[in-house]
Amino acid sequence: MSIKDRVAIIGTGCSKFGEHYDKSAEDLVVEAGFEAMADAGVDRGQIQAGWVGTLSSALSGNALSDPLKLTDIPITRVENYCASGMDAVRGAAFAIAAGMYDIVIALGFEKMRDMVQGGLPAPHPVFDNGESPHIFALVANRYFKDHGATKSTLAQVAIKNHHNGTLSPKAHLRMEVTEEQVLRAPMIYEPLGLFDCCPTTDGAAAVVLCRADLARSFRDDPVYIKGIGLSVSYGRPHYNPAYRYDGFPATRNAAAQAYEQAGVTPDEIDLAEIHDCFTITEILNYEDLGFCARGEGGKAAEEGRFALDGEMPVNPSGGLKSFGHPIGATGVRMLYELTQHLRGQAGERQVQGAELGLAHNLGGLGGVACVTILGNQR
Image 1 (spheres, helix red, strand yellow):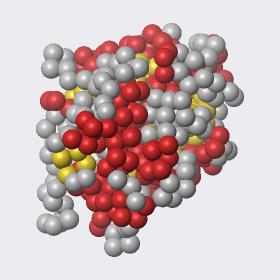
Image 2 (spheres, one colour):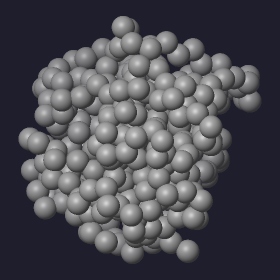
Image 3 (spheres, helix red, strand yellow):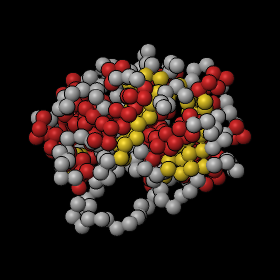
C-alpha cells in the first residue's frame, strides 16, 4: 500500500539556523514548533501525537512535549544519524496513513554547540579511526581518479550553495564565496577544505501533518506527501570489501522506494534539497538520485545544471553547506524549504511553477538514507 496523497503538510516552522549561544535547545524547539502550529492554524489541543528527531543521546519524547506543553499524548523520539528528522516525519506520516491520528506534529532539532557525543566503543581498532571528513575525502579522491574531477569541481558546489544561502533569511552562513576562497581555504582532509564542509549549527524545524482529506479545511494550499523511502545499508560502507567509494547504496535504495510510491521518475522532479554535508556528497547524490548518469555529476556541477537558474535547482535554500546542519533538524528543514516553493512562498529563491520536490538525507558515513517526495497537486 502506498502512502501517496494520504497525508498532507499543513504547517511548517523553522528557527533561524546558526550558533545560538544565547538560546537553549528548548528555545529552538519552541520557535519552530509554535511557528508550524500557527502556520497550520491549529493549537496544541488539536495535536494528537508527536515525533521528534534528534541525535542527542539520553533525550526522550519530553524533548518535544515539555517545550511545546504537549502533555498526555504519545511522543516518539527518533534517532537515525543525520536522517533522524526525516525519519521522524516518516513515522508521523505512516501513523496518519494507518488511521491512528488525524493531526500530528513532527519536529527535528539539535543544539550542536552544546552537544557532547558518546556511546559504545568503536567496534574496529583500524577502520573506525578518523571522522566523517576522512571517509568522504576517500570518496572524493576516488571520484577524481575515476572521472577527472578536481578541487575546482567541488568548489562549484560551494559557490552555488553559498549564493543560494544569501537568499535564505534563516540560513547560517549568508555569504558568497569565490573559487579562489574555496581553493585557498584551510585543508580539513585532502582534498576537502574548509568550504567543502558544512558548518556546525544549532537549529530546529517542524511540520504539522494531517489526513489529506482534511487538509483543505485548514488551508487552500496544502502540500501532499507522494512517497517516503528509507534504507539502511552498511553503517560503515568501508567495512564492505565490495564498496567502491563511488556513491551510497542506501540513497539509491531509498530513492527507488520514493519514486515507486510517488509514481514518478527523476526527470519529473522540479527542485530538490539534498544532503551536501561535503561538496563531494552533493555531486554523488546527483548520480545516486538519478538526476544525471554515473560519472557526470562533476560535469553537471561545472556546467551549472543544478543552479537556481539551471535545469533543476538543487539546494535552493543553500543546503547544509550554507543553511547549516543541526543533525536532527536538517531533514525536517528540507521539507520546510520544499513546502515554501510548492506554495509559491520562497521569495527571491522561488523555483517558479514547482509542483514536485524531493528531499534527501544521508546519515552517518553513508549507511542510512531517507528520501521524501512532496507535491502540491492531489
